[in-house]
Amino acid sequence: MSGAGVGIELPAYYSYYDSPVKVVAAEGGVPQVWRVVMETGGWSREDELLGELLFAASGEVAKRSAEEFVQDVERYRSNYLSGDGPVFALYETAAAILDSARRERRNPTPGEQAMVRGIRRKSFVMFEEALHSAGDPAADPDVGA
Image 1 (cartoon, rainbow, N blue to C red):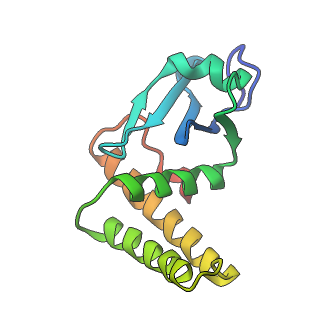
Image 2: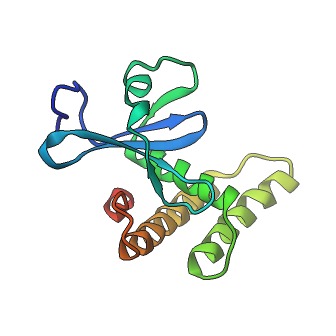
């Protein structure tokens, strides 16, 4: 779907100063910008970022694929959030895989990288489903499916 008069395909995904951001079409095709919130892992509407995202006005803006976006969001959430429950257990599992490689002073193997990507896709869907149930208007578990 293309945004009304915006000239980009929506949804679109970005890294903005290392923060995951998505641009989605709301009713009537009007673009809305949603940025992940460090304190909650939910979404904050920040439409004022649209111009900077579209024109990459700084070197701190990068377009991302949907898969890269999911990985970015979950890396971000796992770095800034803590708690109990199945999502946090998944974060710990992914961290343990990556920490093991770091301790051994090597890059993660392709198999380890695939496991971490799979874990993050699963945690993304679980987190987004919980946000959706709690009424977060920008929650979209389908991105990670």
